[in-house]
Length: 157
Image (cartoon, rainbow, N blue to C red; front, side, top):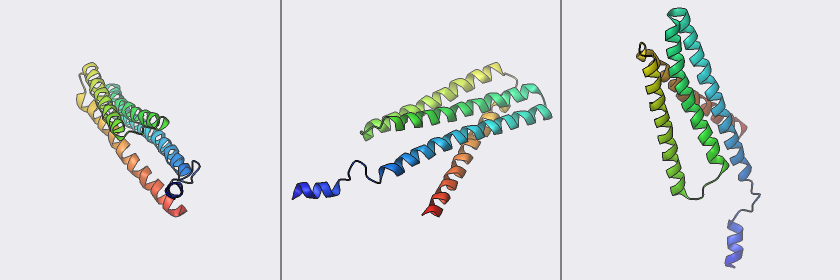
């Protein structure tokens, strides 16, 4: 009796729950790529506006700061895709990996910002502005894409 009850409660290997999970992972990877492309476009647009409005040195500073932000978003997307490729069954190990990936991204941003600020000594505010613009684009795009996919999935249901 106990074995029959356990078999009733345990879904079979090809349960209907598995395909939606793969679709969610695929949509998440697709939205991560869209966010990176949007960051790139906004950074290039801001650098182009700097060339038209002031000097090429300022455009390079915006590209430096925005490029660091794009690299941060790409590192996030890469780590997210790697995490889905090898599932971890231990929640403690998953949490440790999340902290490690966050620290890795933080360290990469700090080191790269330090290098770019050391090279472009004349325009630290513009470098930081380019980075903030890229990060704001990352946040806004993630929110907008999340709302778009949630409203699209509600229409399907």
